[in-house]
Length: 130
Image 1 (cartoon, one colour):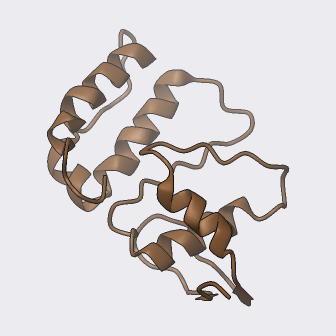
Image 2: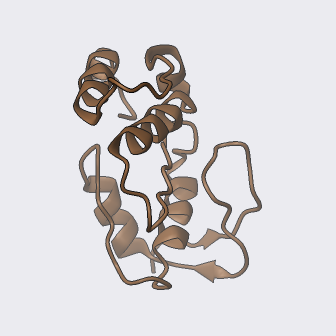
Image 3: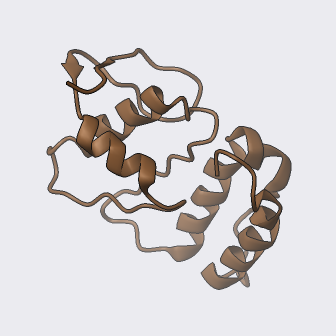
């Protein structure tokens, strides 16, 4: 039987808290552990994506390096999305020293933000935890 993750109360990581119960998802935890730096988890609403990811982040000890970006269903503004990504990265231990703050501007498009984030994060190359 794989590791058991006990639910936690909230912390200051910006990642939603796990509430109630015990869930063992060792196979999924293993897959997440082998995944790339950016991983898309897609499943129907209510299937446990948030609980799975929050539990895995806690189990793997990644709270200081996990960037959590909740996006409302109705959100379609790439600038706002990428600003949220930058803010979430700045909330991580490594990202706080590397990612420069962003504010919305008329001439700031999604590609400009992505290029800037890549420049900021290139210094993470080869560092453990990323």
